[in-house]
Length: 78
Image (cartoon, rainbow, N blue to C red):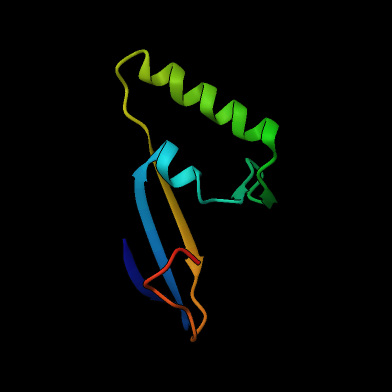
């Protein structure tokens, strides 16, 4: 994980195993670059894609970010 300043906002960026990062991510970016809630159907499709790649010995990574509030507690999973 890394915290950076992006146009005056502090962001935390996380990279890790897809199934681990996805467990904490409620929203995502669609193919047309819209921010949308991840539905159970979308999550199932992503998990199937991850399993399909893993069956071919391919490793998947997930990258997520969150805009930090000035009062963000970096010690917990909020």
